Image (cartoon, rainbow, N blue to C red; front, side, top):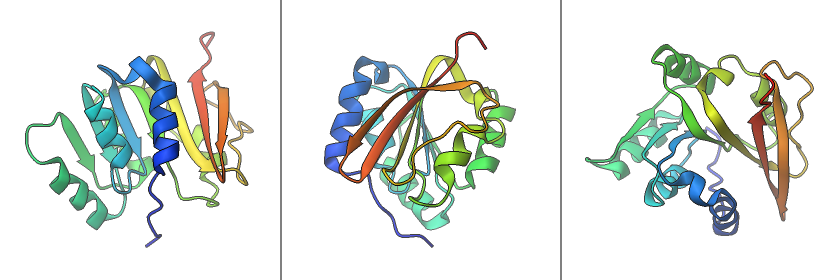
Length: 168
């Protein structure tokens, strides 16, 4: 089991400052949720709902326990590809998709191309990938016609913002 590397306070603050009002009323998807900290913050800032995807069962159970009752949230203890397939079968769409995969694991290159990713984008959706500065997000394989709109660096951490090309 990989160690958890929670999003730092500085990066979290920057993320939600950049997202601004987009979070209010958003359908929020937190991939590689870890502790769930980012999804919890989205709910705190007015997200209408949140889906947390965490492949490590004990971490997913911790998120469920912290959520408690009364939140419009769902926790999926599935690997990301399987979770996306499950989500697509249910017709769920998201306005904000956040992913914080393990650093230096190859996900920064492969994540934008995984099957079913484009099917979870609501109109005008924004995707944010948190990653190491040493492993930039690339769109070498870009079957979903995504484009990088911005990349911000915070020490060893980057936030890369992507959207579907409106022409697609």
